[in-house]
Image (cartoon, rainbow over all chains, first blue to last red; front, side, top):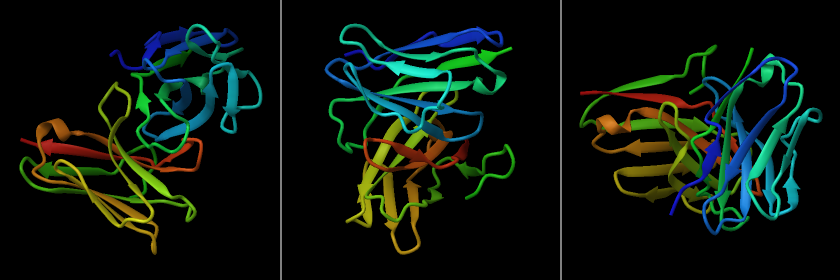
Length: 115
Length: 111
């Protein structure tokens, strides 16, 4: 049973370009969460999605960031017109149910570097 | 403990000794707390959790203590091993699995 799969593991973009990060949840999980981690800090919640629905986007920046979790395929975190401050590790997690199970299963992360 | 600038508080512990990592949380309404371990270049890994109606919970070599009066959480690791070297984060669940992570504590195990 494969874990949460994220790709790319490393992504380099120049300022103004777009970054797309993909996340395939664990098999049987329909709840996906995106978190961002700056160097030597804890993870910050961004967004919680179920298939085709955004449940909670209270941690998403109001501009340039969007997320989706289509009926088929992986969840996508999209960052438009990236700036240096977007450089971070972006982690995806999944769970089988949306209630507070505690045991979110995290992927290995996608590390975005903006030049 | 609190991080200072960009440096994580670090606990250096001799292999075989016990480790204690502390965490202060902010939301008195939180009812669910989790400890995660993160190794360099990897994602967080679940260690143990505890609900607010408990004050202690034990796992394999780990114990979590919760003091709601002072909003304090601790993780005890028995007989620390080299594989325990990592950054440890406490997190509180603010609903919808919207976890609020602490700043982390680096544990370095000295062989």
